[in-house]
Image 1: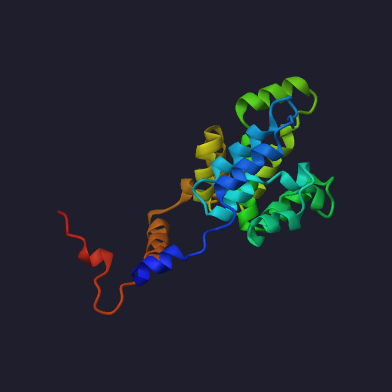
Image 2: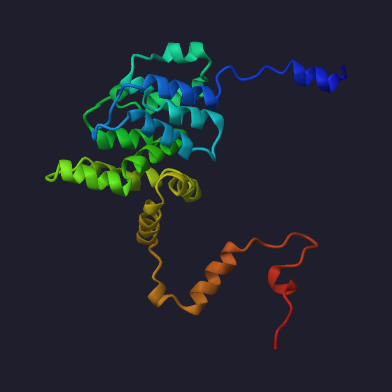
Length: 228
């Protein structure tokens, strides 16, 4: 056996994989129902699936994001199974009962938004809970104050905490209907006065944003062919 083959054969494999997390999530939440009496495992699987563009720890935390909330599973039990400390930390941060004040939902959202990885998981969780069909069903069940109100209020806080393209990737997978809302929030956050923006102002902003040419390099303006 050659040295590269030897190294490959003896490279330790992760003891707890994304697929393991998915199976554990299905088993752990198998008998649980959500507010609409639907299988709760469908929710946790959807959240994990929505994080497919991210690394394994984030995906594992997605599948297991409610395991510390809704089952007797402990931090040590997860670590003993081979879940990494990083993934367990994400799970614990999104677990409401472990927050300083579990009854203050918006405070919990702000706490989650302090951590990039936990925010991604919570965006996926929020998006699945905000699917149009689910929103309609919850509104019919609680017409005075449907539970989705708090999800609406949480989204701007979560979206502001991570790069917008990461949010887009999650929403595209789990709830594309929220992409328009995201664009509206971005428009509201853009305070540029386009109506009164002069040509000189736009040129100045463009010049400031353009990197200077290094020694021996030609600037973009100099290299661009002249047009009559």
